[in-house]
Image (cartoon, rainbow, N blue to C red; front, side):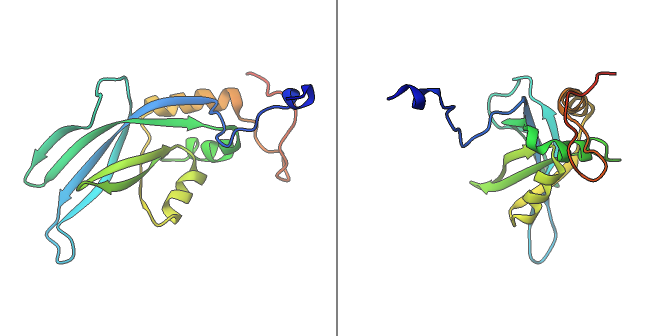
Length: 167
């Protein structure tokens, strides 16, 4: 390999996130009395994962349904999604968006995001997705990231250049 080729940066098809937070998702199955479906699944909460659960755990079960804690997901933050993070963070009801699929009779989360733009992609994909209220711990983590990395667009839609001032 020549020196010129060695000097070029390597392209990675997967960008490296600027921040990551391990999370667990509470998935709930409700029993339905409906002629077309006997059950409905939904993500009902996303919690910071402190490593307490190594695998999927049943949290509760009764005649109305069951709730499962599913660890192992990560909220990853990328620079090119900052507008979507900011829009969500400043919303009246910020959400964590969860895309999930049925696996072996149980709804299993595949991906979670705090970007409105990414959440819209999930809902438009035709896959199963839910938006759940963002808890205070995740909201504070996202706010800290935005204070360090988000530069609002200038009037007219162009990004401002230069470093953001700390207040």
